Length: 447
Ligand SMILES: Cc1ncc(COP(=O)(O)O)c(C=O)c1O
Image 1 (cartoon, helix red, strand yellow):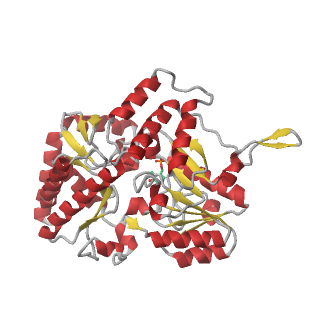
Image 2: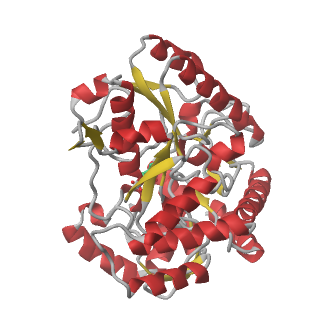
Image 3: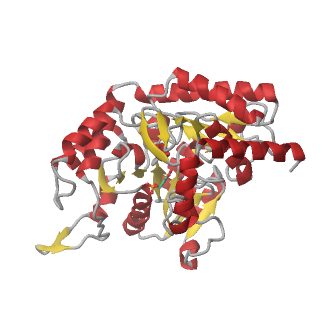
């Protein structure tokens, strides 16, 4: 690091520490009892994470009383922002009626009906609590339905942290080798590699983030999804769209509604529960029938795939989810979130053009991804969509130190972004938020 860069880094750390002494003190306590002091790898930040005391709309406040424009958006769950009135009212009216009935309840039926009325592939669904569980269930259901064992997925696409999806090519510590043997990982958008894998005839499921890895950080186009649909149908393999983030951000019908491609299965989480814990595996009724109890000779037989889960379809999550989905269905909230993100991308790119850093900001929906340069420098965001930047440069290639520095610089300016690096917008971010964020970005890239 040059002497000038080192001085700037020290100055930045000094500003951050001066502004956030309460977070620093909590981080010191947390490090004694929580690995790295955090509860999710995505919340790790050097020198320490921010401790938030409350949030409202598009903003949140740390324990020292500093205000931030929030682009974490509850890891993407909060398309209506924090404490949206209709969601708060739904939660408040449910919370006094009980947290858990250990029984079926009307809200879960209404919640499922609402989702199935919006998501084209959703003939039926099974609730889970997390997106991780939904993708895990999808793999088990697909294997049981097809009688095949292999799963094909795309490098860089995120499907949660269970053993079947949380390893790159070649495996990872803690993952049983037999699991990696039954998984084929192909390069993003590589349809020829998918077809080669399908030709063996043993593939139960192809799974994909339909917008491309991490909500479009490595973009995928509609024609790729259409070709995948044709390929999987031709080989008798099920296709799953992982719409844990994309669902209800691309359109009311999710990415599948936007691109007009209907998969066999869809994993949903985040927005479907309005910021509370809740997720689902939705899809074709015949495929999901492996979850059904059956009758044989008048006797009840266990499902092919028994599925439990203490907190499935919790009534408070159901209330929050139903309220959120109704707002999305009846208003222009999705378009507003998209509009805000487009304004941010334009404004940040204008800053970058003046600075000539070789960075660029891109995205298509209520998102922005910051490409922080490297050996390939796209002149325009469009070049990323024209695949002029190799996919391996788009995700995970920027040194963590550089990303942490940008995040801390933005926090000093009152803006919280995600460490992809990038962010997620909501329907309640305002034009003023956009202007303030672009000004903060201009100041941060000076540092
Ligand atoms: C596309 C995708 N799939 C699955 C998951 C896992 O969901 P959860 O964190 O609810 O387990 C995520 C979480 O970010 C995701 O973005």
